[in-house]
Image (cartoon, rainbow, N blue to C red):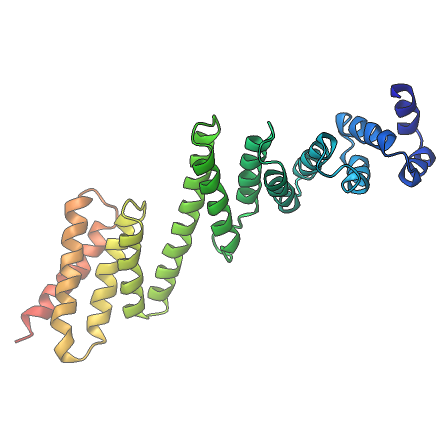
Length: 258
């Protein structure tokens, strides 16, 4: 069989004949040889033909796993994730199940888009990673999975922060303030806390400037409060001088409110 495989791999005509052959055992051997030689395109063509023939058998298990690996190794992460998930579903007790579960999570991570785009796939990736950690808490890959999870959550945080800033730049101060407040609740350890406090102080000042007289006082006071929090938490902040100037203006405004 090994000799035949070598001959088959050397000829396009032979490969076409193999595709049309009804000898599934021979096709399986050739497919495995292609995979071992890193010829994933030819291996996949044969795996696609063999999936049904060897369903629920040890060879079917290997076909499904190596199909997923072929797509992963050719950077087709979306299809790879599908096949890794299929493998875990169909072969939950396989010795490869844990690896496939992690690879499903990792491929889902790779599909996650940059923070400026829709994050539906990021949420799916987070679910896949959390499921892996829950199902395999003793796995050697858990630490790596947690790092992937951290990266994805940071991406969501970055997107939320950019939305808040966008509201402020659009001069929708009420929406900006609400967005910043929600960020501090949602991400209590956010890396943007310093900028958020500064932006909130400025947003409250601008909001007060555009408010009816009855609302100005509380919004100027909120501006000063956010500045004081910024000064307390980040006494060396690069934004402190600019924010202090805004707070000073708010204090002067308050002096004229009776």
